[in-house]
Image 1 (cartoon, rainbow, N blue to C red):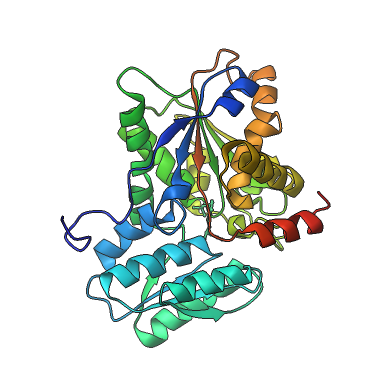
Image 2 (cartoon, rainbow, N blue to C red):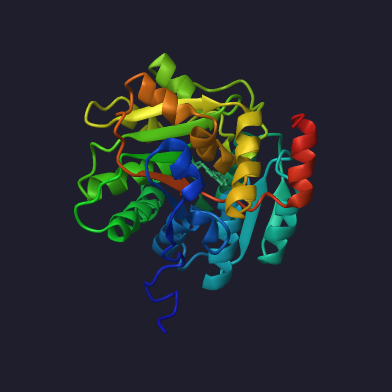
Length: 327
Ligand code: PLV
């Protein structure tokens, strides 16, 4: 077998599964792209693996600021590459992430309240100690790596089948940029992308509404992995492109968490609230509303949901979130 150091990938080709429960609700076929089954638990490994292969081979160490999952992916890749890793997370990230990161052999530092604070420290440390800075969402190499998710969807669907829409969660916008790049690569630029955030972690929606990049005062959502106060510039620029159809929508924390719970009950898979935001587009009836409003066609082709995954969840964390959000 080719070693991961010799230009093969760190990520795996994930299954594209037909989801009966969601298909029944929508009256159209819904496919789940199971990124939760990636090594390190989320899609992040695609972009971060690619970026590290390009930039970190000779590195004396990498440093990544993260809400959690970019950090877990970085620590995983760094371990495989034999490079030391330091992951800076904010105090809002759950304790269970610290354990996951330490299990991957990373040095963990908790700095500030939200991701933006942790990022300032990661940039400082990279500069001061000559470490390679790994951004969690804002880099062309990350988007290039993430784009492979769409290439795989196209291969799984087979020739002549095109999605009616793709559903993604948006934090800093790296996944969105990768999905758009992937759609361009397979000549699916006309496929609508429904970009989901939670209220209180809505930096993309705020920028789309304002027509310019916006920095939120604070992250008040419990979907901490969507919590970048400013979305990346490329994601905003895509939202302004007349060649693309990006529909920015919000759900409440309660809807995102309810979606996590329904997904666990019906599909037997536990994901983070960050992922629940995308799932909630189906479970909360939002897709149906977009169809009623004529923003998505009534006769919708197969819907592809990117199940972005996430490691910051277990049964205890789920119970604590349910308690916090009164569900
Ligand atoms: N999480 C980033 C940014 O956090 C991180 O550091 O892990 N779904 C999951 C499970 C995620 O972890 C993230 C990003 C997203 C979706 C959104 O992806 P993005 O940031 O590329 O839009 C602050």
